[in-house]
Length: 484
Ligand code: ADP
Image (cartoon, rainbow, N blue to C red; front, side):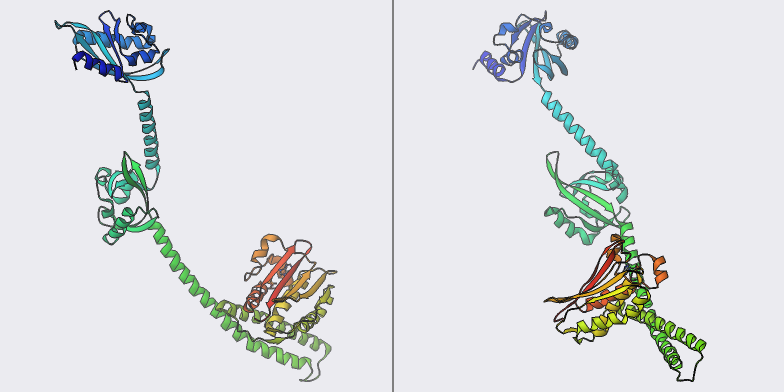
């Protein structure tokens, strides 16, 4: 192939624009790429014309100056140029220029090879932009961040350098896993080779050899064409210390709680004996066993009996509380005639209801016998009825109802008293919880009754609960499973 043909083949098929101008600045040649650019088919569309016919004024100066320099010096030039052309719109071009000579070695004009690099520029800018944003993000975090290729650190932020006590440039190039305590090396390698992305904790080594706890999370990523991992490191020394402190504190609190329970148990137990003695002898006096009493004396003794009785109930609650906290109640289940029991307990509250001008209603169907600890069921029922009476004003009503079911019996105590706001309900059965300590102080109570009731009902395998509407009343209920 002759030179001429070779030249043709190249300039016809390149996507670059190739033009040649004579020394007067007139185009003497344009390749197909140049024709395509200006939307022409014939070379006459370009040949014979000058730059002014194609380029906007702001581009002309640079083109003319570089042409002149190439002609004057004979040295090729290359530059990027962006402008908006009526022919091809807003574009960036990379232009290379060199002189061409005649046979005598005289410069005849300038050859320009022009490549459209608009897209390339845009991608480059976008990439630089996103890299910049990423870098800012990484520099702004407290976490240490590293990019590593099979463990070898290729990028890291200042926070990581500070964390590990290395100058940043020393950190880059290090084998990442080797900055962990030796016993973790195999584990970390495994994480890297299996591309595991779950967070993990290791003991890390600072440059000075001291250890610290660090949490690491890694993700695979592409970085400059490489498959790498991006890892974030968090110094968790403080968190670890806090956790350890909390564990110790918890243990200590558990110990204290146990001590308190033991104390409550022992004291209650010790209180119970003399109280029984006081009430016993006071009752004897009340009955006139110790001799005839004047009306005044009788009145005093009655007060003693009542006071001792209240104290005993309180001490019983405390004993139950200590038992409840210690684990489980020992139930003594036997066959119980529940209908009868409910009626009896209801009846026992009659005097108190009458005194408070509250109507006590009973609706109990005949029931098949049930296995339960009668004393404990009485206690729960008594507590619910006692509460209902306490929180219901004169003129009110407390209804006790029993629903028989195949799997369980359900006992309900419903009042039309003051009711309870919804946000208290989930806490009501917690120990010591009282809706309003003020009111309760007025009506008496420790906040233990419902907690003990729940423990007792649950010990039976049953459930306890409440529905309530403030101002309208409450309905406390519990179930006792059949065949428990
Ligand atoms: P307390 O000894 O204080 O009565 P409980 O555990 O039996 O302890 O009850 C806890 C709290 O629940 C009471 O202080 C009271 O605020 C609320 N409460 C219980 N029963 C009723 C009820 N029938 N109506 C309104 N509030 C009630």
